[in-house]
Length: 287
Length: 265
Ligand SMILES: Nc1ncnc2c1ncn2[C@@H]1O[C@H](COP(=O)(O)OP(=O)(O)OP(=O)(O)O)[C@@H](O)[C@H]1O
Ligand SMILES: [Mg+2]
Image (tube, rainbow over all chains, first blue to last red; front, side, top):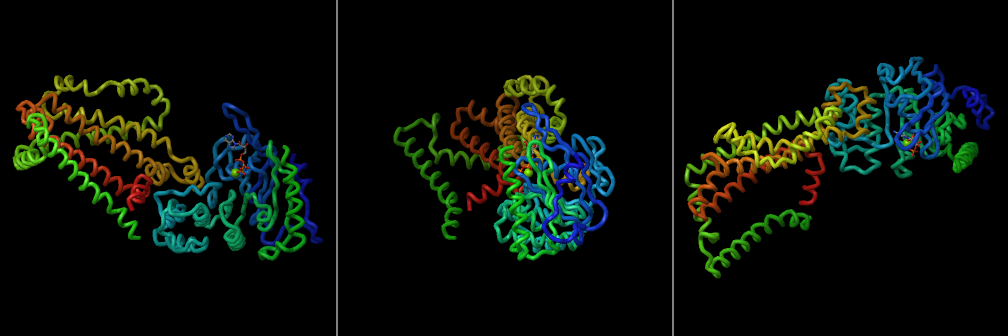
């Protein structure tokens, strides 16, 4: 299986030899070795993922695309230490995340997770929600509030710091969740369709911000999205998962230099990649 | 803006208006049909009697007894209900093995047990406190149990992904999200507690507003009977509003609190 998916790694049309993209060089941050996941419920046995092999370098930005139900969230939850894989191994900086069904929490410090749902705490204000990770870590009140206000500004929620989640729209809540994940300046950032609820313009702005933050903090990012353009725009590589069972169909390296401006989307090479990926996703339809 | 304000003021205007109309119709009814004072005294007579009852210091002793019994019973129910609810919510096998007992003890008409309590604990306050506690216990316990189990799995995952300790998960998540259930149980519980106390007083003893009801009945003093019932209602309302106020103070973020405000404002 490992050989299989390695073969599928395609390189984009660029003449450049496919070295690691700038800012993404370095040792392996995350290694997935033969990851599989089965769910057993009363009604069905679902093979959600099977034979996932992937190595992600330190500082790399990896986008994951795939049709609904192909196992993206399942994969992310295993990386976040929330769900144990049925088979295979996950190594973070060479250390095993899972020992059987037990998670080694010392491996996952400096982890930021943005879930598919915002999962805010309704009893805390926006600022308190954003600062929660800092509070759990034991940072002082002034310090963490300053950081919360700074992040609220960053995600375009300046002025809403004292509001409560119920007073926000879905997209605003999701941005609070993003700010919360960023608060500890994570070295590993896992994001599950974080911008799904945003309008096109806000989304574009958040894409640029995310790129800037990822580069500035040299964070490794695993970014799940349904939006192919977004995946290509942000990713050093785009991983395409096919459903039933979830497997890696191809891994596409995106060779444009980072940081990328929004104009990169008009370059012919960019459009070609997006088109190829769309075709490949279309083929998943009947499966 | 002005529309919003007038909506907010509406209950303050409508309630007195309805009451005035109600009392007027009552008075009219009593006069037109010349109803005996023994059956239905007019509001004026009741008011007169109410003033008499309220100015009698003995009434306040009775009221204090009733309030004490209710609050004591309620607090016992609160502490034990939360404790048992948390344990049963957290330990499913225990809940499963105790479920038949719990269902059975809920179905038993507990008010029927009062004579037993009187035999065991006498005519004093103890038997009433126990009755109030028994009635208030179940809604609190069942709500807490439900609350402990209803912690949102997504929020739980947030805490886990943040590498939180058990204590942190408890204080930041479990405690907070169970609070609305505790208060829902308390709001039902306080009402049941006062019912338990009053029924207890009806059946035994010589103190409390419930006893006063029975005594005025035996004296066939209908106006005083009405006045005492009004006092009891006021006591019940007061206790309910205290619990409701606590809820507003402790969980302003919950939809049962802010939703109400939105509807009013
Ligand atoms: N806890 C679970 N129990 C049983 N089956 C599950 C569970 N979680 C996921 N599945 C199954 O695993 C498969 C993959 O689910 P997953 O949530 O990972 O999909 P996804 O790629 O994130 O989809 P979407 O894009 O819609 O979010 C689905 O078929 C789903 O039914
Ligand atoms: Mg998903």
